[in-house]
Image (cartoon, rainbow, N blue to C red; front, side):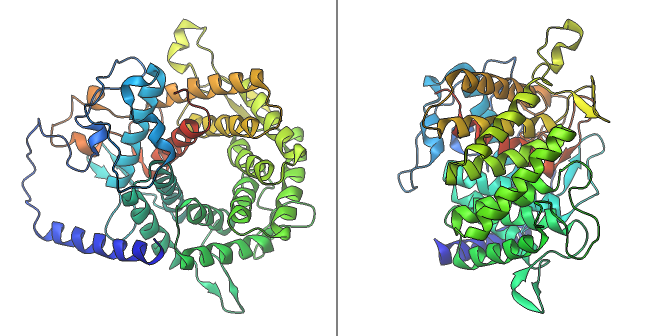
Length: 442
């Protein structure tokens, strides 16, 4: 698939350009016609949600030409438990929305404001890389080459903004601000891509070499061109760096990567115990789960469980009828104190951490079934909340029929903010995908 991936990317760009040249500018469309780019598995669009019963789609066949994929075990929709079926449909629609947001130049549209019908501002390298990561994971989970091609296009466009170091051609890094985290997310997107071309894997190693220069002997992370540690505030930036190196070690094992991840996790565990913060948990959990799965390091698994246990205590149970809509979400932490505020799309990242904790338990020689069931239930509740932030057919009826396909499948940040942004839907898609693979009931 190495050379075929680049050929497919080129053909996709040509086909898109041809489509633009022949596009009919008329805005109206048949309101009964579903978006043409939705896969047969979710056509026609059915109102699936946490409070809505969906109709099982008629088509659930797997293409014989495609390689087997983890998602295949969920394709017999009528045999799935109700909750799993709802999460499956939510995942598929989120993947398709991300895919539709992809442009011929390789970048994602940064977002859309449905109230004003405008494209949002605030695009960034980091958000684009996160979108590529989510679409690459979509390709790995479903086996859909369309997602792989589009993720690779975004990666290639971002690599143009991450040149090699003139003094050290084995190293490359993004330009601009937040270089460490940006490099980490771009590397993770490459390593999550199935059957990535050799050239992309080489670029991933070059990004890893840059991250190596950021890892300090005490386990902290510091950009070599800046004086402040990247994780000085609360450890948030250390997680993506360690996760990227752990994924890099999975693809191309090296002793220095294992050592850097182990030292970084030990340092981050001290930071977490000193001032725990939910924002630092998701990517540190990815790093620790990867480290344990590769090396069976018990300390890494213990850190995963320590973070998951602490995080679970922040989850809203829905006992308060005035906050029933918050059920499954998580409280915030400010200045070391828990703040009872309305949950947001950040809940998706926390659900991903809990799913990774379940994955860690499954890899252990003596799995803790009780702990697994607690984490699985907490992750499921969290993702049920996340689905309430997704646009579907049932909650877009007040929009014009021709405009709904631009919204359906996307995730907005909160109940009070309906703006769509690529990074929010990317977080939801990445989390839902991880949950289905790691711990969903069949």
